[in-house]
Length: 159
Image 1 (cartoon, rainbow, N blue to C red):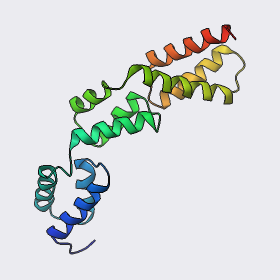
Image 2 (image 1 turned 120 degrees about the vertical axis):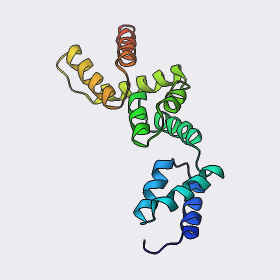
Image 3 (image 1 turned 60 degrees about the vertical axis):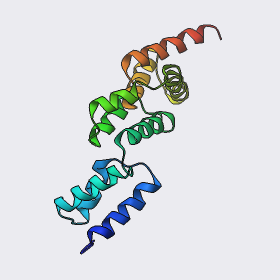
Image 4 (image 1 turned 120 degrees about the horizontal axis):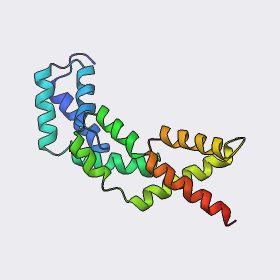
């Protein structure tokens, strides 16, 4: 965009922010792509924060919730994504710690159960290795993966 005024830019990003949660870094990048000077960008961002269009904590809570519930991401992957969005470590950690452990492990367990059906392996060792790599790629921690794989191995004995 060329020759956009500060007021037009503010109105556009305010409308954009009112449709979904966005973080400060996303809006800053958008304004930079529009070719606005940094002092104008700073004023717009300050106003958006003051008027609660942008709220890092609200964004972080929504992001964490959506990514683990709907995208089925693990805590590691969520933390990395938030770091890329320049969300502070403390804010990120606060909301990752609010994730219900039982629900989190249940999501991981259902992912592993579904993946188990599509994996071809020569033996249990190879199968578990493939399941672990899959879960690690989704951002789950090894302690949680081991917990769920042991549970499913124990459940197999009762069938």
